[in-house]
Structures are given as C-alpha cells and as structure tokens.
Length: 122
Image (tube, rainbow, N blue to C red):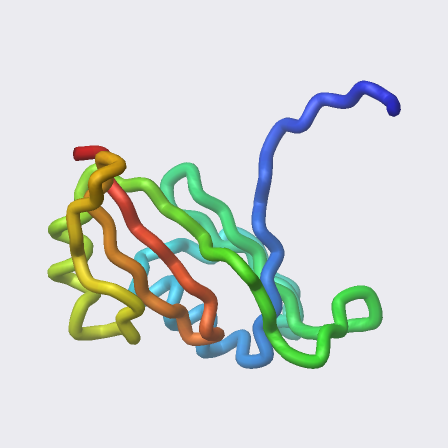
C-alpha cells in the first residue's frame, strides 16, 4: 500500500432539502455557509474548526434514502449553554447527561435525521 498523508476529514452527507439544511445549520447551530453551488446541489458549512458538506443526490451519490449508521460528535467547551439554547428548538435523541467515561453530552437530530452529539470533558 502506498504511503500518504491525511490532512483533514470533512463529512459529506446527503440532503434532499438543501434549503432546510442551510436554515438548520446556519440559524439553529450558527454555522456559516462558506461555499455553495448556485443550484444548491452542494454546500459547505463551517463552525469554528468544524466543516460539514452536504450534497443532493446525483450520479455519484444516489442512495435510495439518507443513511448513516453512526453520529457526528462535536466537542465544545460550552455544552450546558448549548443544551439550554437547543433543547426547545430540535428533536432530542437524549438530554444533557454526565457519563461515567468523563463526558457531559446530549444528542439531537438535524433536519435530515442525522444524529448530532455534543460533548464536553468533565
């Protein structure tokens, strides 16, 4: 196998409603849209050092439905304040909780049904 250097991981997720995705990530989670195609078939969103891209189904990415077997885990230093801001605006997976593995976290679903977990070291 050839040797290579990996420099960054940026999730590329499907969205069948890009307007709703843009609204959720920019208005609810305070991400910034840093790049997009005019037809909104692709967008790149950023919040501090976190970047997520979304695309609409196309010939290269045409899954019958949006799927992801895991979650996006976002670390923050303000998880309690973030929970207070989001708890009445989003679909909750589980509320703010302290875990034995040393994290305080909660989880929500975005408008596409993707699981977003937010955590802070205790």
